[in-house]
Image 1 (tube, rainbow, N blue to C red):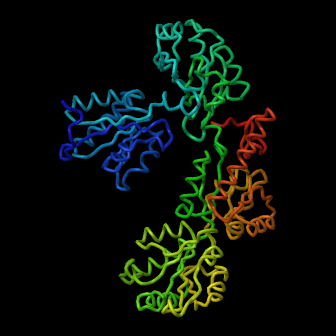
Image 2 (image 1 turned 90 degrees about the vertical axis):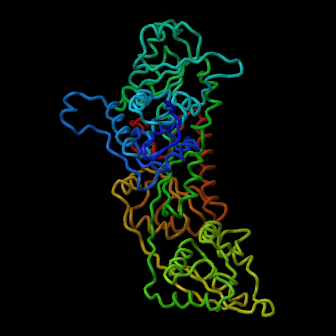
Image 3 (image 1 turned 30 degrees about the vertical axis):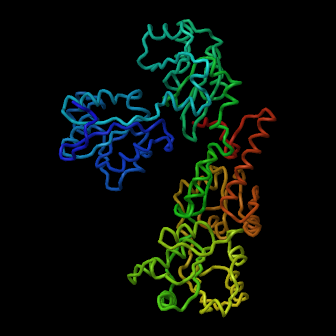
Length: 549
């Protein structure tokens, strides 16, 4: 049988796919391609969210638990159930993706499932992934080999025999041990009993490649003391997987220099972004690049104007040639006009002959997605003031029409209108949408805001301050408050908040950058003082007693 035979949907096909150790960014391009074509997705629970994001919304995700009482009584192993799920779906002619944590060839029991498919006459292929035992040390700053070479041995502590421990113990190979937090000290003892010296360096990493990652360095002989001193052991979460790397490359002084992931300026910080997912997409990506965990909480909701006639007349005016310019001040304004276009059966071609301005990069991006390339975007400050800096004055010789269509929110400021009039333009200032306070977030989020569960909050306008406090309460005093400009900072202070970070420019990306610089300075100060690096939320009462996993 050829396991890489082309897919014939009538006969079904299975892709065994490695989803990596946890970081969604470690999925391969081939994995994303396979997930997009899947009819059925069967994934290890640890990576289901990682892979499901790349599958179609219609993909079938069957339950993997045994529901048949006779099967329960017979103690049917989970492996057999998963293999049966895979084969049943494939026999019905479906494209099946079986996603596993790490790599199908090195992690878990995927090989046995492949054999079951082979025995059942089901074609399959394998998409390798980043193996847990390889990816986690890389993120922990522990290279398994260097220019001098050296052997590497991979050990699964659950199945390792006395002979295995003795072989690894008497060798000089770097040992990568897959085990659990409450068993790692016993594994270290097995290696010492097998012949390794007690002063051999060891690193232990939990939640590797995720923003919950944490690494400790010790020696085989001192590991138990180090974990107890760090209040990691004993732990209620002792069953969580860990990767231990044993050998000179785990030495603390080298790992500190190579720890690129855990030393990111906002590593592990829970950052509250009071914007919708659509508005916060690029900002959240930027925060993740600094190691943060962004949480989007919308503080405003967008609703149609109470009287739609003004908007309807303006959109018709676009088609009949009433305007020389249309200026978009937000993504929501683009969305409002686009919806009206679709209502009238129009598309981007209706903008032919009209100059289009966008107040910033995100608004311009939204227009381009609509099929409209803006003629004017601020070259400097991404704001109404920045747009006015570049806006040409009305010239009756070159401008046949002197009118500008300005669709915007009901609570927008008059800066742009006044500036355009001063430049000689007539302005149709039209309410395209209303902004109202959003519904309160879930109780868990509200408690985290008031109780200090967030490390930082980014305020991008005065209204986000007022609305967040109104729907969720005032952030705890340990939470770092970052504001986009002086007006927003003033509103925050009026609500009793201490402003820690002020963006040097009125840009959400400069605001995130300023927060990252604040986090880096805070980290450097802790290291210089010889203190442990902690997150702001760990300063709240009782938080130090809870080990972060």
